[in-house]
Image (cartoon, rainbow, N blue to C red; front, side, top):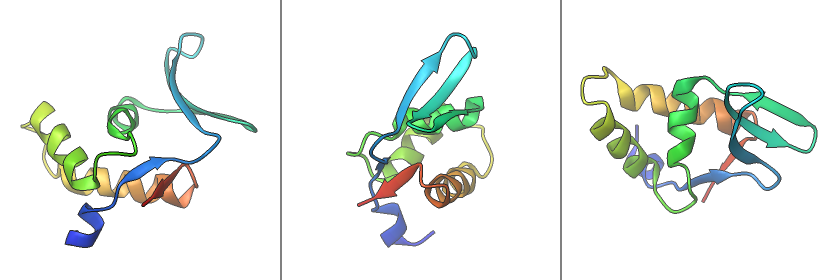
Length: 92
């Protein structure tokens, strides 16, 4: 992962909202056309996405929460690539 990638600040795209959905018993991304159910790992990552913290800071925070997790940085980066590719996130 390059230094430039670590300095990017991800945020939810306009029109998307991250929230807990009791009826689904999971976190979801809501958007005008529907809803995306998230697994626990995706929800933990998106809880860190606030439009202020860089990708590097998000990875550091998650590594502090889960010090025994192997290859956490790679997993977070892969999720961010999928989320960006699906237009859930944008980076500044």
